[in-house]
Length: 426
Image (tube, rainbow, N blue to C red; front, side, top):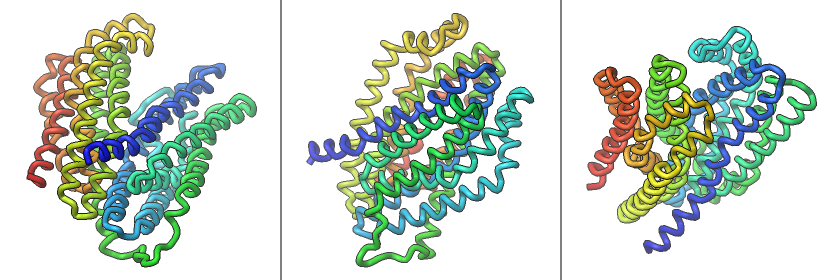
C-alpha cells in the first residue's frame, strides 16, 4: 500500500512540479521583449503592471483552492463532480467581470501603493486597462486548474501552462517586435493567452462537463453556501499573507535601496522552495480530499503521513541546494557588488527557510483538501499577528530582525496548522 500510495503521489506531483517551474517564464518573456525597447520606462511600466496583477490574482487564488477541495471530496464520495466545476466557473466569471467594472478604482489604488514616475505610471495604466480584460478567463483558469487537481487530472494544468506561455511568447514577439505596440502589446498578449488557456482547459476537461446519470442541481443552496464560505475564508487568509509579504518589502525599502534589492534576490529562494513543495502540497489536496469524501479516516492519515515524508525529502533537498548553491545563485541573479555582498550577508537566514517554511506549505495542501477554510483563515491571522509582534521586538536588528521575523512567521504557520491537524485527528 505504501509503495502504491507513493507512486500515486509522484504521478500527481510531477506534472505540477513542471508547471510550477515553467510559471516564471511568462514574466521572463515579457521582460526580455520589452527590455530590448529603446527606453527603460517600458520595462518599468511592465514590471509595475505585472506586480499589480500578481497581487490582484493571488488574492483570488481561493478559487483554485476551494474548487480543488470540493472536487476531490466529490470524487472520493462518488458524487457528481461536474457541478463543482460549473459552480467554480460561474463564480470565477462573475468575479472577473466585477474586476473589469471596478478596474479604474483598483488601478489607481494599486499604482498609488506601487509608486513610480508619472511617465511610468501612465504606461502602466495602459497595461492594466488592457490586461484586465483577461480577468474572467484568468479567474476561470483557477477553477479549471483546481478542478483538474481535485479530480487527479494533474497533466491538464501543465498543458494549460505550456499553451498559455507559448501563446504569450508568440504574441509578444508579433505585437511588440513586429507591430510595435510596446506596453500595450505585452498586455494584449497576456490577456489573449488567458483566453487561449481557458479554451484549452475546457477542451482537455470536456469529459467532466458531460452530465452524469444522476446529476446534482448546480444551484443547490447548501452547496453554494458551503462554496462561498470556504472561498471567503481562504480569501481572508490570502489577504493576510499578502499583507505580511507587502510589509516585509516595505520595511526592506526603508532600510535603503541596496537592502531592498538584496531582499528581492533572497526572496527568490523562497519562491524556488515554494515551487518545489507545491507539487506535493497539491498531491496532498487531491488525496486528502478524496479520503475525506469517502469518510476514510485511515486513508486520510496515510495521505497525511506519506505526503509529509515527501515534504521532508523536499525540505532536505532545498536545504542542501541552498547551502551549496546559495552564493552562486546570488551571483547569477545580480552582478552588482553591493547587492551581491549584502544578499550574501543575509544568506544564513535563507538557509533556515526549508526548516521553517516547509510544514506550512504541506499543511496548506491538507487543509485545502479537507476544506478547512476557517482553520486556514484563523491560523494565518494568528501567524500574521505574531509576525507584527516579533517585528516590533526586533526592529533594532534592522534587516536581521526582518529576516528573523519572516522565519518566525513561517514557523508559526506550520505550528498553528499542525496543532489544528493534531486536534482534529488525534
